[in-house]
Image 1 (cartoon, rainbow, N blue to C red):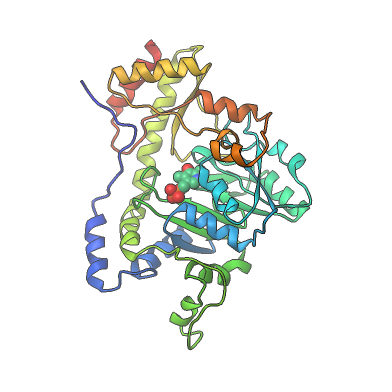
Image 2 (tube, protein in one colour; image 1 turned 60 degrees about the vertical axis):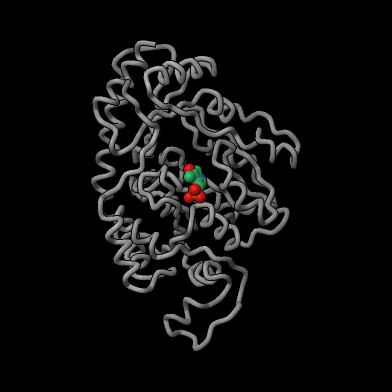
Length: 379
Ligand SMILES: *Cc1c(COP(=O)(O)O)cnc(C)c1O
């Protein structure tokens, strides 16, 4: 029987030679040659003002929480349908998490429901661009301006995706909020095993971000010759990756066009095939008009949890691995043990129960996508 995994990490072929180059350079700690190459790549391709590679997206989110000076009791608004790190980064600094429901048509946070959650203690809004599809950033940035809040984009899944503002201007995701966090975990489009990046769109944070990333020291300034000794000047941790990781990442970045083209082709094939036949068991993903698709994920929404369970089994019988996604955080054991129960997050609850992700990776073949669609349409 043919076997189709859910994910398989893509390799451009240059990873090991760049790693070797990094090793032979004799400078394998952080902020070496390949880290700089990656930073320059992101700046030139996406126009990001300042980028700092981190060891994960989780770390980039933790840096963001320190940068906006979260204090115990501060409130942070985010979707419940997200990964734990979106919340943990702020909980670690004592923040209270206020969950916003997802949109009816998309797992991203419902921008219409944010304003009612804002209080005098609110410090930040954390939009999560689920499946690499933008949240409604113009509404979110306007709210942030009105109420003097920070916006930190969880752009973990959102590399090479865009948002179009009502005036027609277009910006890359991760380039809109005050700060943004990307992931290069092996399950994302562009990978380095583990890895991430903090993007700083508000230059007021530039200097302090370098310090926090370097254990609370002004070592980055020292290496640039701007100070003659370095020492402990702020809070911090070790958030910078080895240059060996950056070498791997750079090999991926050089292939970004190719990777994205392939993923989009497969995504479009799924979409076209599954729209051919009308069915009442599942619906296809919706991309809001202001968003673009970076083909991070292809998911279906089933009518019921049982229908999803049955389809997972049918696919598995044919050697095809499909997986559901987040348990909404307001239903998690950790959150429920700390906070009073939250209700009314009906869309978050629905995505928890009925969303199913299909195999999506560079080496997936057109024949495999066809085979998966056959199973989906005949069951
Ligand atoms: C993958 C992911 C993260 C965590 O990324 P790491 O690099 O593994 O820390 C955070 N948020 C979202 C939405 C993700 O998909």
